[in-house]
Image (spheres, rainbow, N blue to C red):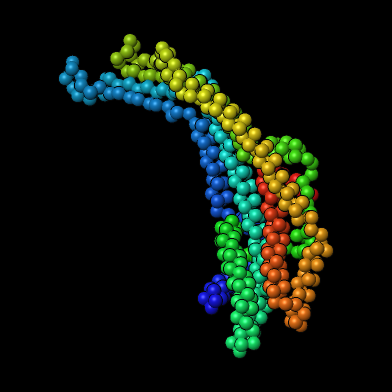
Length: 415
């Protein structure tokens, strides 16, 4: 028993000694947008996509070549540059719309990077909200358990004195002790949960202090009673319009088509255009010639990549169909999950929760006055402990399941 108490106090001391900040959900979201390292790192993908567009616009550099005489056999002179030299310059000219197609593909890839960033933003923000809601109710559980523990530890200490004196049976002492052990187990579990959620909040917000959620009773009630507008079919339609992950898969079809078009254009031979100066080895002295070179298209040099690109289009079309079905199914499941939690909680009337607290206060008072037996008292305390934890869990699940709908639909749907 002493070991358990020591462990609980150690965990509590660790939590209390850590720096703390009271922050609203809006404050956490501002810190998240400013400090989240995953988000900041992902932003560079868009910058790199801009660089890809810039690179796609760049043409091959022109090439210049020159020559001088290495050995003049008539005069038996080496490096007779004064009588024999020449130079030429050539430029690769892209044909078949290669550059245009490459640029369009690079622009499409940037749009994909933006959609990936948007999805990451929604996912991380949803994780932030879920963690915040978890912290709210884990800390509420902690407060409730601490209050019960204080009373039960005082009662257990008093019973220990009377048991040692022989005034109370050991069986009654052990009955009380079992409740204290369960409360301590609850506290350890809750404290461990809080430590995990605090660690996640630090990663998400970039704030090193422990965050204490700041939410008023009216704000809490407003979130709990909020309902999504429209029926499930409307939610599905809005998800298809706004979900960045699904839009990414749609855009991937266009992107793969642009890639296929680019690969097809690579089968068109390019033109090498240039000019040449020759001092003495041509038909005329100091002649200037126009040079034109183009590969002979005896076969399609990029045929394999074209076929591969066509299959990629078909593959992305099938993936898009799957993602559509998957998104609609997830929305349906998330909506039903939220409704189940919502209906479960609101079967309880506010007066029921008030009565629970009233009965708890009355039980404590009557037990002190000797009007309630120890068995009735311990039975009630066990029931009260479970009920309080379940009520907080129901509230938390309403918020988390509502946030899951928000994450999927990715537009304001609760009012």
